[in-house]
Length: 374
Image (cartoon, rainbow, N blue to C red):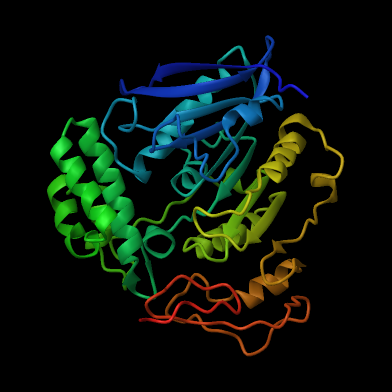
């Protein structure tokens, strides 16, 4: 079967303060209008998070216009990059711009993971919100969900991510020497010792530098983002990974949305931040088909359990929401979190083992033995 033709083009618009935001747009054949999927990210619109998602062409071939935007100060968009605090205003302006386009039917869904996950939750105008959203591996509390656990910085992860953004900033400014220095440090692993100095030299005002300078043991001085109350009633597909450090943020979002009456799905798999073992694109497509098109495809969302789904512990388990909440108690309170001695009966795991290696802080898969040191 030949895939439906898809057109690709770039477009841009200007915000109220004169900043130009550049987007890449994939559209199905025909005149439209179509429901639209929006991703707003800081890594270059051509990449479109295809490390974990299907290419936008795939979604466009299923009847969606897909828009991937360079956020302010990144890629080809103008302005200075300010991180999460800039996204509420720019996201709201982006929705208004999309809904003014002749090829958009006004129904908009947002998707993306990590930074792109949080951009879906930050909006300035409660009357200008997406109709459905699929945030993955993100949270609202910069200290607890992005920068630290148990009163300690995410040293390797935090430095590597901040340096990645700093390197992109160097390239944008034409600083080839700075870009090369950061790249060498990341590739060699030397950033674990020299990364803070590189950040101070090349991105001293950046969000990552601010996190590394903050006290991870105290909430003072840290940002906690609060979406508009109306967002919690919008349909959500929330995605997390057992081996992803942002899982506590996903669970916090799930609890908030559940309390707000959202029609939502929660899917947690045996995934790392960048390793999704085939991804969730078909489920995500079915989710948007239902909530943006009013359609249910055979064997897709109509057959998905409404309760949270956990997979990766030798089999898939569907658990009742209250039991999952109880079992994961303490996920957002790192100082008091603990392993429970009993597991709710409604969560039935196959017999497994939990291993902990101080030099390998990522949770290990059950019964996996790391190589012994030489």
